[in-house]
Length: 156
Picture 1 (tube, one colour):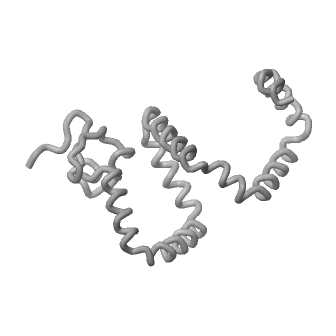
Picture 2: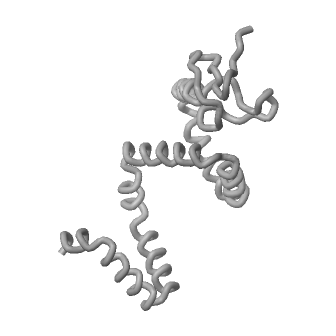
Picture 3: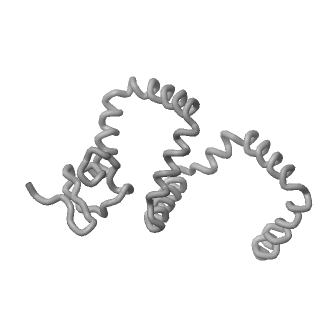
């Protein structure tokens, strides 16, 4: 058998591409020797997408199940995400952030989310401002106006 792991890099057994051995490129699995599976995330995602295309009738069932599960296990999910980020080094966190931001830009996520949740966001913002107090809000506005003077001038 050929070696699949050299100097912090690992080869995917599906595509054969060598990638940096971390949780961004390979999923975790405790039962594997080094704690990561042998198929890269890209190949794993392709395989999952093919399966989903073949079994579209399961899509709605999964969506409903996921909503129900997420609602019932909010604390558990938050704790799991926190521990996952705790084991990442700063470089991996930055890579993850870049990847997330790229996806958000490509899918126009922020604008769509705002359009769907406009009332909810405004309600939350009002509550937040009330909690801060008018003096704190004005203080922050003054700081923003000083640091972003060009933006403020162009807006007016």
